[in-house]
View 1 (cartoon, rainbow, N blue to C red):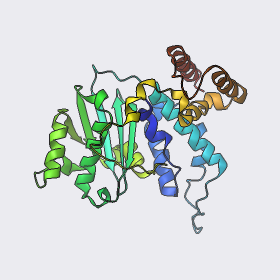
View 2 (tube, rainbow, N blue to C red; view 1 turned 45 degrees about the horizontal axis):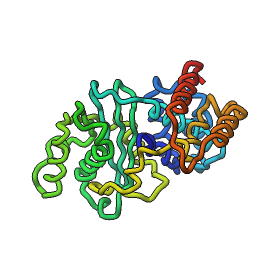
View 3 (cartoon, rainbow, N blue to C red; view 1 turned 45 degrees about the vertical axis):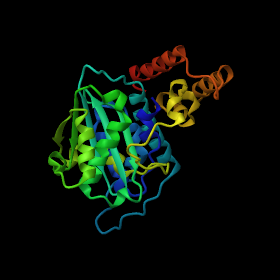
View 4 (cartoon, rainbow, N blue to C red; view 1 turned 90 degrees about the vertical axis):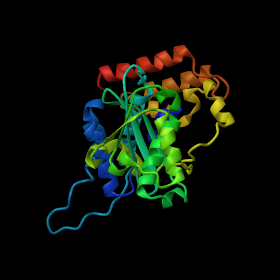
Length: 291
């Protein structure tokens, strides 16, 4: 469950005006999914305007207010996906994109995201041709969510036309194509301006230093995910507490933290079914009141 929102939780803040506009553009493109986004994004949009005629663009400065708004918007997006349950009777639409240094993807159903994905490229992968980077993004996404996607109807959307007709120019591409065929997906070309979420996840850097090691074997940590507790991960816990409906009620948020710490062991006790139901109820209550 953690990997569904790993990409959004580890997304670093924009370091330039162009990246900031890209992040805001992604949120506004899917505006129907996140109510009151304008209020949350206000500290960010205030710094994206063009300078007046004859004036120079002011230097890009990141303020604490902007960081708070950025964290709240990420929490809102992550909570949406965290509570989204994939329906294997409906098709999955995977939007992928690759930049010179990172991969990005988004899994969607009924026009709403059910999982995010991003991964840094290692030094060797950065030297790949563009078509190989785009194909690598497809491969890495399918491997990451194999248990969710295998056997389902899959539609892959890419803004790189050449990937629709990959030739047999290298053994690596043949190997990758054979893996993709296992899922029997339908490939679609989507124009770059419409591939907003995947583009943003491929450009805003991750906070970790991991790379996309396609084909890696399962580790001991992977086999222990069954006993994983959402509240054992500080990033996920902070994400939920930073939801606008909770962060505006500090006393209520602190009570939630204190109560959980008093009755649960972070290092050994997994999240119970009752606690998960409480979490989902809290989030649904947030949406009904539109924060």
